[in-house]
Length: 498
Image (tube, rainbow, N blue to C red):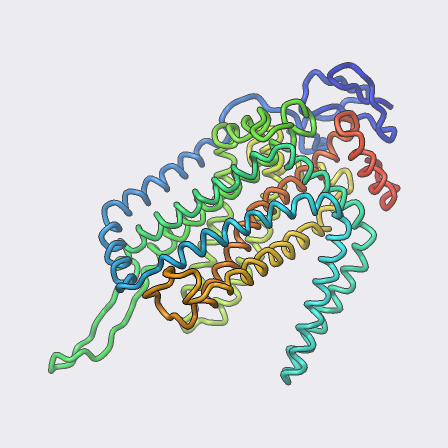
């Protein structure tokens, strides 16, 4: 069988004909599939008409941000100023600010170096990260036994055995995962502008956290009501704090809702950019390519409501979980612990669902529910559930983030009270300057490296979906990468044609 590209040139891909879901000029020679919206169809996506999806949820997000901004302006400004003045206490924090900027710049450079490294030795990195996971679990088990904690050692041994079984089960799939990583890194390198977009959204998330914190300071007396009891002589006997859980839930929901939207907008932007690189590479081969800019515009306009929809579902669960954690000091400790566990499981399921649904939102412009139905229909009908479960690439990102954070911490530890001269004069706790700068370096390295790795993780998810949907286009536009991916896929999964 053959698949015909937009140019009319037939392309043979392992005997399977696949039409381009991105380009409606593509003609398919194989029997036609059901429409993507049909739940009994094969889950192949189609570019949707340009219109706003799930707009009511975008309106809820705008209302949420406006409400927090009003509360911060009316009630929070004075409380924030008082808090900053109290915290300053005459100390000089200039040295810590300079150190943070320097360590942040170092972490960005180190993170940039990891991209070509991942492209050169992706398979070695995946194997090394898997082995490191085994080593860390083994060390945890040994430490528990050496400290005399028999129960903790047994639990550690169980996890160590589980990790050993996991490593053995997925080891044969590392070559395919490594090609996925290589393909994703190539797409990101060709469209490096998405990295700057991700950093921009992180700055926006920081600004939102600051705004939300200011509003929280302004209404804190409404959230936590203090009741002071006095004796007959006028002396204070005790003070009891009563939490208004209704206000607290709304505040948590507001924070998590906006934070999830910012995070998922980045994910959708990356998915659309990788889709453009996959199906129309001429539009996605530069830093600020038309494909990248168009993807970001769609994420902020027509697809923004769908992003808000999925984000709100996760935010509700996160707010309930945070509320349960805030109520831990109450008498119903066991019930609260059970509730936290259940909410944590629901949160993980929703985030897992969103990870793949938002790929379809970014690729085709589906509404949130249509995207979810299509992506799970796709994996169900093509037998890709095992590939989704093999989340091997995330181990690489985790350990590379730790490496970048560790190097930045070591550099930060070199700062002390006399170096550089004058930076740390009149700073609080001069004896802990090195330790504080090391902590700042580790946090800066961990956070800033995670931004780049989150874009590559989104690209990896998109590559998996695109390879299931458009192997013909991949073969035509990126033949070298396509050959590697098909060979590794068919070597370990010969019964599932690519």
